[in-house]
Length: 193
Image 1 (spheres, rainbow, N blue to C red):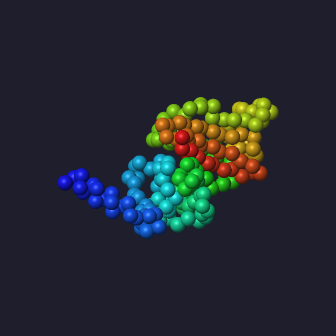
Image 2: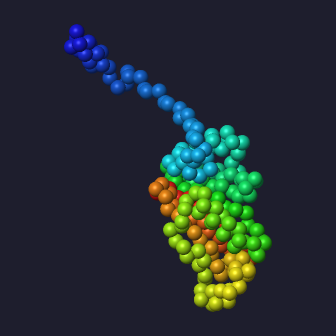
């Protein structure tokens, strides 16, 4: 009986050419939800599709302020930063948060240290590198070495960069504060491995 069924099935296809075969139906992609605790960056995990991020951000009430085929940007008013998602072949590969540039140079390094300590305590543990302060040159170092209250001024003028970096099984994270022309920028960057 099985042999007969197999023979009839094969005989049925033998008379069909590729032009008479129906094309397979295109399957529409349906974005997925994730547990917020499993997100690696805001509402995304490495390898997520572009559509997943738009769906999840939209579900959270966020609309992109800028988008292209390779990136999405969202402003987070509550936490005062802009979040960027970057895609390669429509898959999430890296992301960053850029905190608003501010002119309050006195508190800049304190704010960076607070963010670094929060990432150490609640998220990633001890950074890979403990060399947090990168001076542009020896002259800048010698000028400010005993004047920590002026480190923010040094950052704002491009003389000092504050950096911390972590490694996890799935990503590399860096927290960097730099500056130029009296303005300071704080960036938290995540890159998938």
